[in-house]
Length: 160
Length: 267
Image (cartoon, rainbow over all chains, first blue to last red; front, top):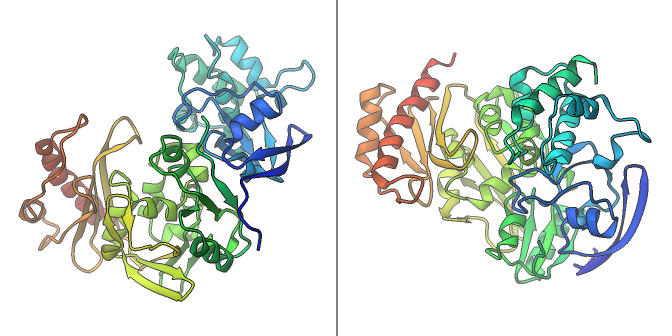
């Protein structure tokens, strides 16, 4: 049986690239992603699990990365907002965000995109109500929700 | 945010987890972490060792017995319960789990974590009491079964002792259940909630009005009987920024009636 440790070396695949780092057990996953792997697309908004700006997809499951420890992600495969576009080609969802003015300050956008991506991968034709429920864990303090819903709807109709 | 220093272990079996919890004073089981990690940020909890239960397959999953009894592993997530075909045998389970927080939290948060944290604003403690669930608590000395009514001991306190784990929740067969809550915003923090079950007698459990769910057993599902029964237990709920004690008393009666009505109308 492994004894408890205060730090350990973990290997995490993020957007197809493998990162091996020694981390303290107390480090939150969001800080590992941002500070240790220099992937600063995922944001820290509230740090209390409310705002969803840190949302990422861990082994296919949408989570708030401020409510997981980095050590818990050892061996996991993670997708962040940086992994959505291929080269310079935006995904249909990202394109729809651009066309529908679905961001103002942009702070919530990475989390919104990950939540909407997780939704569309599970449900290709979500109803308006399903879109609202899927984005319930993501706050936009510019309150630009209407255009965000429009963008997700458009991406779904475009077959994103 | 930087947490206080903590040690971490990921056991490969429940027995290992129990050994780790027993060996280290200040060790705590880490389930979905959707409450614990947050209260650690606020230093409201400061465990020295976290024993991560994620990945212990023996603690998750839902089994439906031939007699309609459901056995739910403590590490089963809300999303798994919402999406489970087996859990539909008791439809209220998925309905209530779908009202907890948001997608991300439901993907990680677990039934066992919810019950063991026994936050008085949680939905599942009153629901489990109303449904007459039984909790399996395992320690190094063996396993014991505790009825939901005796499981919740106080704010953030349950019958699970140091060095023990809640492993499984058993829910008897039945369908005629209801739930009603008034929350801060849709699916937000609860002000008052009520769960009702009319499977052989009427039982209502009211949450957020005391440290543990308050059980009310009306003589019938009739509205007057429910109102009388709620008044009869003499609730003394707390007052806070979200509602006065009087308002909570008013809601308790109203939500008990609504929950019982939903239960009665379910075929």
